[in-house]
Image (cartoon, rainbow, N blue to C red; front, side):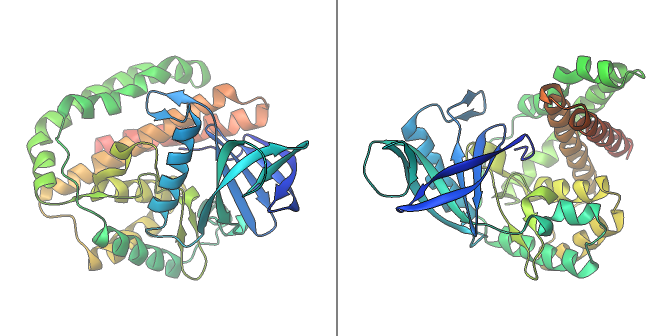
Length: 334
């Protein structure tokens, strides 16, 4: 959900009475301070239809929620710390002054070990994929069961929200994309009508769990034992989904990087521990979910491109959006 390459600034402050210097990275919904072996994540005072960080109490609550939820699968989340401005300095941690905000304190990991970075460099091995698949499967097996009400119209709207970037897609890429997007939405509506009973049945069959919610390669570090991070804490419905949906996101992202072999290997290893494919229709639903995840990533990149100030960054985001759209069209053909 977050773009971590928006802006980088120097940061000077205090942590537990000691000078803390580092890099401040601005994302669309937060700031991240990187300093030495630690990182601090601060939520912005913002409110969207799907997210509300607009009060100090809400930001504290969601910091604590982030710590709790990510603790299900990660040891890098350490504590929630108050932030104060006192005697001309920002202070993180206990101390004098009125609390003005809160930060999630985390262990800082090496950027070169992020999975998306390693994929771009061709550094991801089969063994990495197998270890990751085992980790995700173990997490999914112990994740809490959820039983949401299947809402067909809501499912249609989720895919069809792509219509909001049709004008952007036409401006940046042209080539009849608005018409292709309209056709994709019609195909999505027809698919959901056809498979609505099976999708609802999967809820009763306990395939819906409280998962990560944003499990793509940018939210994974590939150490000897992979590390997942940055799950969705701000909206439970984004996180409480069919296991096929979460699995589809990761497989789709691997295929975006041209590694269909890694996608297939991850699926094979995962299914040895937990196999959510019960009926033939589940494979069709899985491919649909890959199309939906590609749809969402395309939309996010189109929107990010509109706020990019540098031509190079904008070109990169448009290129990514185009790649995700092409994947979406391919999955819908399947």
